[in-house]
Length: 253
Image: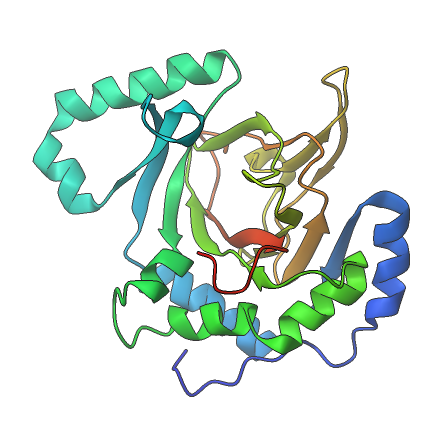
């Protein structure tokens, strides 16, 4: 994938058809969102050229919500050493047992773009596309929210043992109007975990979805949801682009 590759949604997709489903269910999955060529190029990009960071929450009374997001590069992990890293992971797992936390690899696309990380990297072309009028207009039409002004974005890699416990996404000022995920792993198997799960007030899983390849999922992130742990025998990693469609001012980071 090069910066010269043109990114466009599949022109055969009818947003009004999917808008009816979203209006009814507050969740919709849209297959074949890109051409095969583009989807495979993005998959290759995520597999081969990303500077991943291991992310997890750490208590910090000074941070909004009482937690800060730890982002560790491979160099950070090597510098910390095995014992320190093991202690961090034990703490993450202890908190997860109380149904709070997450552990996965990520690349914060908006932060990288605004701070000029990895200048010239093709991931920035995708970041620009997600905040283009083409994608934002499509999102507005499907979810029925003309107030959408921007999209958050992060690339994610869930390997064996990675997870995201149940939670809701509203943002600090209720700016997150809709969550989205693009799947970029082919032939994912149900038993491998990594499923997007919708959860009701009784903590039952009402629906669960494979991270299907070249599929855009849009759902109301203000409903409880989680990503099930990737199993220890998973035969691949789960690659996705995720974020929120937001209604805060366009120039507000």
